[in-house]
Length: 386
Image 1 (cartoon, rainbow, N blue to C red):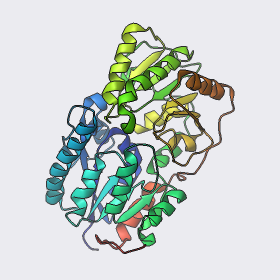
Image 2: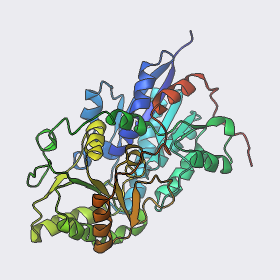
Image 3: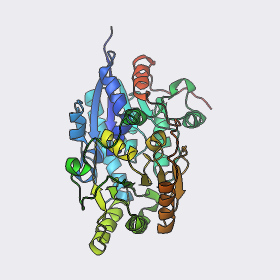
Image 4: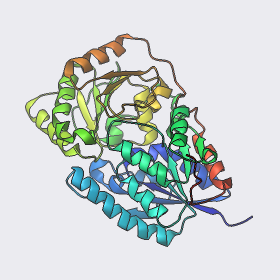
């Protein structure tokens, strides 16, 4: 047997870990592959919920770390953070000498991973290309696709779109989303197996979850970052009218995150909302279990479109951030106004739980990815397919 193929997975943000964890495990366990893990960006920052300890507790070893986030949380800071990432990641990939680099999805800083690999002739795998959304992620995602050599997409629609972008059909695979692998395990849970308050702390009063609860996760929209504070106030006003306890998760480090954070803090100073508790982070398994046992997810996270569609969790999707993505029957789309959010939440509280959808896969993406990475002929040039 020849030398193992070294697969370098670069994780740049908290949500990306759940997107790729089962593939990492499958790569680690595969006899023909060697796993390298580079942890970068906001994934290392406590203020956004560092996942370093989570990864290590899951049995993985972090190979390298890249501190690259520039303060500011505005478009200029995003651009400079990406530039710092390109400089640092270029050195790391040069030293690690992986056979394959894997980049995840579409966060703004992921383009630095793709450029660092592509410019050094390292075969690049892009996970979750071919989708469309309503912010800067749209441009970054398609740019990653064009820089990548191998594509692991999450739906048939995405596969067709990647091929239309000119990619070789023989190198585009609909594996489904690895996060659905974790969601499949969650289907076996019956109630929460942990106490969110005791395990994760957080900020806010503690409410009983026995009669149900709502989860809120709202990130800034990079093309609307100046409006982020106004938008989050509308969601807070809506939350104030909800009678159930609310588990609220802090936003990503995109442009506009500072506006959301300041908006939440200012609102809390003027308004008593005893039924809201704020969290930074949870392990992917605990977060999915929290979602599965909730009455509804409110916000604009892609977890509502992907994992919640598989789990059959009702979702109130706010605004434009997820525009264009494939949806299951679990999503109600609303604008940023308080009334629309409240009405949609009340609808789900009275409606039957939606059926599970396999639009993003059936739960075996990680194993498929590892098997393909072990056997596919590696290359860093393009076959013209226009």
